[in-house]
Amino acid sequence: MNAAKRFLGQFQIVRDIHSKIRGPRPVPPDVDLRAIEAKVLPPDLQFQHLATQAEKIEGMLSAFSMAAVDMMLSFQEGLGAKGSILEIGTYRGKSAVILGAHLRDAERLVLVDINDYLDRAAIDPIKDATDFIVAPSEKLRSALPGYRTRRGSFRFIHIDASHGYEETFQELGMADELLAPLGIIALDDFTNLNYSQNIAAIFKYLFTTDTKLTPLVVTDEKAYLCRREEFDLFAPLVLNTALAEMKSRGIDPVLARTSFGAEYKAFYLRGRLPEEEGGFYGESIYRTAIVGGG
Ligand SMILES: C[S@@+](CC[C@H](N)C(=O)[O-])C[C@H]1O[C@@H](n2cnc3c(N)ncnc32)[C@H](O)[C@@H]1O
Image 1 (cartoon, rainbow, N blue to C red):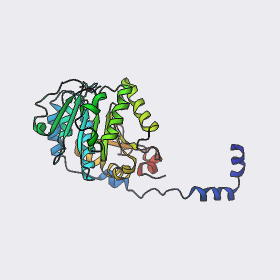
Image 2: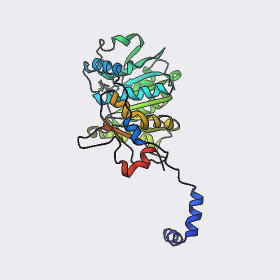
Image 3: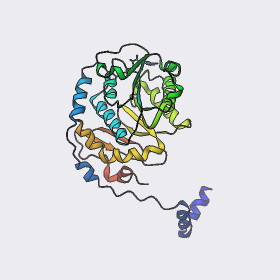
Image 4: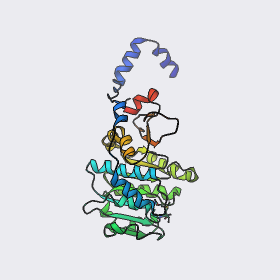
């Protein structure tokens, strides 16, 4: 078969027919990467105040992830997402402080942990809108009151618990059920190979179930997933504003995308290395993928 294809491929007419069947390749959008890099937003003083509050609490959320989580939540809010916020794995409440600052209207923050380590003072400003459930994530379907009716009602879900293989797979399954339209799931320790089972369970879930979830942004700490049909709503926000948004939160960022395919087109957002110039990794080679071309 391959030999036949190679033989036929020699003829221009066959190549022409092949390209007609395949259809035209998508033209890369006309995006001005210099203008994107040059974009400047005023320092986000509200975020800086919030980060200072969160810094006081013992926990595992880095300055980079505080900024990234805050930015992803603001992207969602800009798109009009509505729904409560869930965290599986709260520890003392460091990440909960960042999440809780984004509650609006009647939205609730639901915190789940197998142990009660929660620093009540940390979440005092949002305590009336917060439910704290002490239970293993495996029991969430029974431990979360009204679980069935709350399917599709959480717009942001942060998973930062045991990182066990089975547990992560199950947590992702529940998060998928609970996720609201325009929802984002953030998975911690995505690239921490001390917990290599975590990334294995995540990719098993993404590529062997009938989920609609897909990676939108990955960082050295977390993966942010959205629904495939909503990717194109989030992607322009990431491409056009993530650099400026992260800078406004005190982070000097670089954005990479070296592949743009139907199954995988996530952005990688990270801090700039000392020798790096420019906001886009490998721009001269990967420009087409960065801007979202075929
Ligand atoms: C890394 S800490 C969370 C850190 C927190 N998100 C922060 O930013 O500071 C992990 C938490 O997950 C909890 N945990 C471990 N296994 C769990 C499980 N099966 N179900 C729910 N929580 C679990 C632990 O008790 C611990 O508090």
